Image: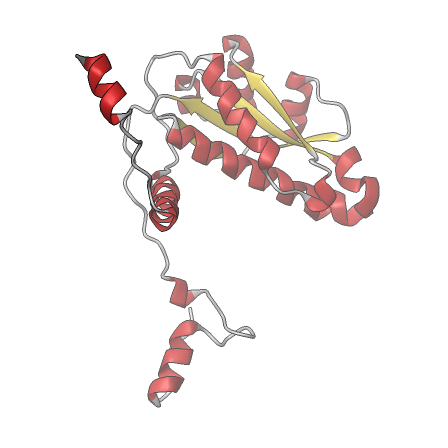
Length: 221
């Protein structure tokens, strides 16, 4: 019966989604991930499979970097003893031990400075690693994982614990695991408070005031 139906009418066509609708959906998904991401400091007692860790790390490959030098190195730490040492290096932020995975993001200054010199090691390399980390955080959010970006630690201690070469500078420790909390949404500035038009001081608020021809007595923050 099914065969006769398929023979007579053909297989049903897949419903095609209009391109405009697909773009809207992609925008909604991206903004949802951005808005929902939080710094998680409480984790479930569950391991994170390396298949998921690999997906998180895969996202770093597509981060932009100056000259496409990709000056980043990532060290995945699951060993409990090493994690305890890293917690000590992070000035004893004991909550970190709840996370089953630490990912240490480093800048490779040989690559960062290969063409751009001091500008590369002092700025471009760190910028590139920061963008790669943001990719990781959003990918983790999409996978139902929680993260926290930690910048307060002794670089010397972390380098020694992980045996980083001299040209490899630790920039951040990312905790990774299944969240056991839903952190509250912190207060955010409105873009009118920090976006300037053409030059500093010409904020969006001031521009609106000018258009409406009202007195410009607003205070800048």
